Image 1 (cartoon, rainbow, N blue to C red):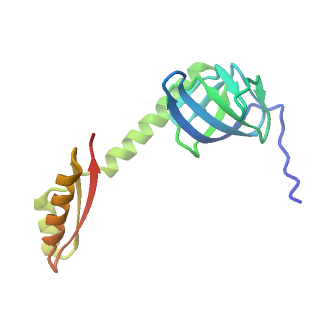
Image 2: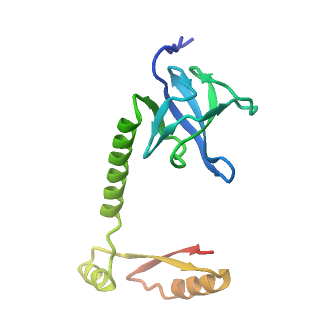
Image 3: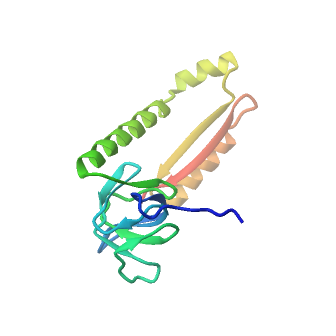
Length: 173
C-alpha cells in the first residue's frame, strides 16, 4: 500500500471539486481537504476568490464544524464561484486573503489581455499573402438558432482552396 499520511493539525489545504451559484445561499463550493483540518470560521483563498467559511455541510447535507484530511465538505461564504480543480488553502487573516486574491485576479486579467489580440481582415490578408496563415477562425454570435446556422452554412460554402474557414457559433440569449 502507499501509506499516504496527512497531518490534521495543520492549516487546511485541498482542492475544489465543484462550484456553483445557489439562489438562496450564494456561492457554494464542494471541496476535498488534502491536508490539515478546515473549520467553520477559517479564512480560505481559492483562485481569485476568498472568504470566511460561514457554514459547512457533509455530503448528506448535515452541518459539520470541521473537515479533516480526505473529507469532502460543502462550504458557504466565498466571494465568488471557484473553478473545479482550483486549490484552496487557509490563510491567516482577511487582509492577506484580499491581497493574494487581487494579485491572482490581476494575473488572470493580464493573461487574458495578452491572449485576446484581435485580428483584422487586413492583418489576415497580409499574413495570407505571405503564406503564414491558411485558416480563418470565425465566431458567430446570435440570439436565434436559425439565423446563426444559416450564416454558418453560408460561410462554410465560401471556403477557398487557399483559406479554410473554421466557423464556431454561440447563442446569446
